[in-house]
Amino acid sequence: MDSSFTIVAEPNRRAILRLLLSSERSVGEIERELRLSQPSVSKHLRVLREAGFVESRVEAQRRLYRLRPEPFAELDEWLVPFRRFWSKHVDALEQHLRKMENTPHAKGKKRHDKP
Amino acid sequence: MDSSFTIVAEPNRRAILRLLLSSERSVGEIERELRLSQPSVSKHLRVLREAGFVESRVEAQRRLYRLRPEPFAELDEWLVPFRRFWSKHVDALEQHLRKMENTPHAKGKKRHDKP
DNA sequence: CAGGCATATACTCATCTGGCTATATATCCA
DNA sequence: TGGATATATAGCCAGATGAGTATATGCCTG
Image (cartoon, rainbow over all chains, first blue to last red; front, side, top):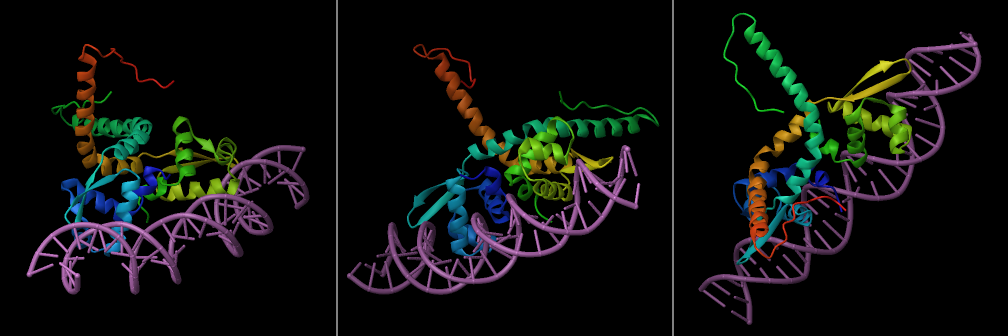
């Protein structure tokens, strides 16, 4: 079983996921919107389904695919410790900008809720 | 140039990144902690460096590698729209759990620790 | 300068993966 | 029922990639 990162490493799969973000779609719709061959779309969808990123329901001859949340949460969890790390840098940058704002003459400060 | 997702798709690279989270390290330290061959570590570090995940400084004959924040932020940004999506589900789950907690027959468990 | 660490690179090999073509399966409709 | 539509799967191939071995490069110390 592959990591969720392996799954989203593929650009076309990420494109499919972005599409499904707005609404569920059939294979043919994805095929046309992304200009991929039908077998290619089906194969990617299989990978995405087996990894839990999508699920499908049957409507006549079509299969409508939609997102599932779990794997995204897993990706996010991996990022958590790193987020602590890079947010320090973001804060430092913000503080720097704020300081520059304040140097000539004081300006309004707005607080960003960060730990 | 590869997507940041491609870079972190590799398990050993993720392991290296996790190591660097606590402190900068030399190639040799990574080699020993992860039990990888030295060329393998160097190669992964090259990929990580070229993708902006790490940078190095020279200390005598060693090179100390440390994290850089930008690519992580990029990964995070990609997740943003999906986060909106899955948090709905998390909310639904939490609400469901809360309801079960309040049910008379249910035992009021609040722990989610691993055994 | 020699010799030794520490790290980078070159090269080879095996594996994996995505795309393509062809075909199978399934459902609808006339 | 048969043909059309929609999707899945199989098989093949080319390119990418990670591991391993061997070697090159760089720096430090005696």
